[in-house]
Image (tube, rainbow, N blue to C red; front, side):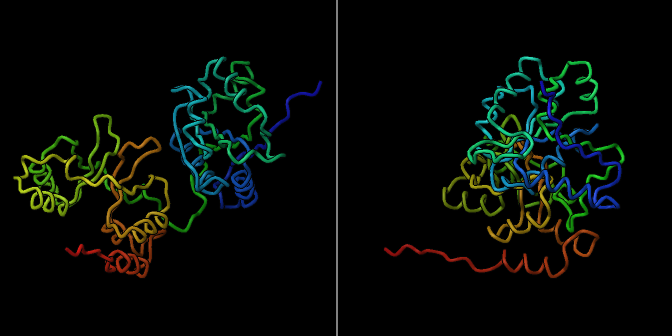
Amino acid sequence: MMGPRRGLRIDLAEPLGKGSAGRAHDLMVAAQSDAGVLVVAAEAGRRHYFARLIHRRGLRRAGTWLATDGAAEDLAALFERAGGGTLFLDGVAALTTSQQRRLLRLLDGRDGFGMAPVPPHRTRLIVGAGPEIFAAVRARAFSERLFYRLNVIRIDDGTSASLEESTMTVRDLMSTPPHTCQPETNLAAVTQTMWDRDCGFVPVVDQEGHLAGVLTDRDICVAAATRRLVPERISAAQAMSTDVHACLPDDSLDEAIATMKKFQIRRLPVVDGNGHLQGVLSMNDVARAAGKKGGPSAADVVATLAAICAPRAVEVAVA
């Protein structure tokens, strides 16, 4: 009987893009396939970074990105929620035997090594684990069949979490911690927060920290004038904008700037893969980074401001 087939192993002993062009190329090959990937690194943040990078450069980059703890929820439900995009399960070394079997069943009918195309409606799987996964496989605490079903990318402790991209990421510039309010907060209290924090933008979050909407100083003025109520009698939920454009911490600055241009907005809430607010990226943050290494050029900043400030078409109702 044939033994388990081994997946692609990329041992990144050097920083990506620094004397290891071949290894970086292999990583991009993995990104451009639809094969399952196991990212091994000691730090959870670095596993998430590389998994997100593979998604952003992969075939499903326009689809849903869902990141969660592999043992946290029903695996089948997670595949459904990912909706044909990319599902990142971290901490898979802690999966129970039954969960490992369930994951294998969910992968049945797929080619784990990119030898055959995956049906377009299926979700791509990327999983993460610490270096202990190797000992777990040797001790048979982790399924050898599942382990070898995945392309294993090992990120050593000295590996730079970078592919020498030309731009900063949102995480490099975003303001933290964000100053927030809750849906039931009245507008007088929100205005006081804006005054105290010298800002004109306050994200609205629910009890669990999920982004529910955003409030600007303009929203407050319009709500007070049109409702003809004092701000103390108007809640954030009544005045906030719920059609919110957000970004992820590991999105490139270019991606965030493109969103600002497209929707003519000066501020972007930054959320994690589960919608929890992490910070805020403003046009001020972008402007201050102009000319710095990896940052935008002055011309980029001017072009972005010009796009944001461009006149918008306004429909006027005629009686």
